[in-house]
Amino acid sequence: MTPTTRRLLLLAPFAAAAAGGVGFYAALDRQRRGVYNPRGVPSALIGQHAPDFTLPALEESGVEGFGAADLRTFTRPLLVNFWASWCVPCIIEHPQLMKLSREGVPVLGIAYKDKPSDSLQFIRRHGNPFRRLARDEPGRVAIDWGLYGVPETYLLDRQGIIRWRYAGPITDEVLAQDLRPLLQRYAA
Amino acid sequence: MKRFLLALALLAPLAAPAILVPGVAHATTNPADMLPDAALEQRARALGREIRCMVCQNQSIEDSEVALARDLRLVVRERITAGYTDAQVRDFLHARYGDFVLLRPPFTWSTAALWATPVVALLIGFSLILLSRRRSAQPAPPAPLTEEEKRRLAALDAETRDGTRA
Image (cartoon, rainbow over all chains, first blue to last red; front, side, top):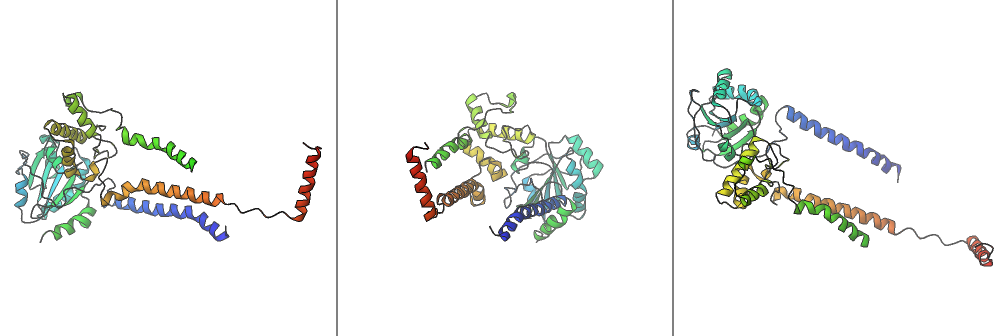
């Protein structure tokens, strides 16, 4: 074994460790900025029409409930947001939903496995960003959407086709880096 | 080669349980959620053990306490009671949750690396073993004896034959 080979062999573990470190740093940094979710799973519904459903309204919320047919009545891309009053990340994403709603983006809410009185209390305290607000207390419609946690947000184009799904809170970074470009792309 | 085959034979039982035994039954199913028909319940359990709990991700829906896992257990039981086949129930969940929901994902281009990894790792291991064996099987032939060594050997040989050393 020549001295050069020996030196290279000695360096190899350090190089491997350094490469691992760089990889971990990148993953953690992306996670911190909210653009990477290690538990994220791609939706099986991308490119498909929303599943068929009708859900009751949340009474006293002041807005109507909705069903699959209503999703095709909007003239611009819309968001379907599954949330719950017991869901802490939902509080984190709420200001972003309010912002979108003020800009005129149709945000449709579905309260998932939540008591109607608790859902009402939540939107009274934090504001109501939802143009329509339905409730799925048994959580069965959510299964048809492939939902596996709250919050989860789906972007639908004007034809009612699901284009994007985000599992987790819509942070400012997700809004700027993912959602805004998509809203623009599907606006046409 | 014989030792090589012996090693394979010893390794085989390690791989077998994963294929043959679908896990010990310790379902978290609430007795009230169980199907009254034992045969259908058995089918539902076997099927549920192949469905991933999307929340905990490393447990099947039969093993998880999470609310969504319970909902999916009920969906499986409802559809089995309604007369759907196992494959139809699996397709129902696959259409909604994708490949990830199946603990035994189908072999497609996107899952090829997943399925091929153990085979590739085994091949690399075996080729490393073969390589190191070939290298150690052919030691350099010893240098021929010098005249001096031959003479000493002959002397020793004569000594032993004399019986002075046994």
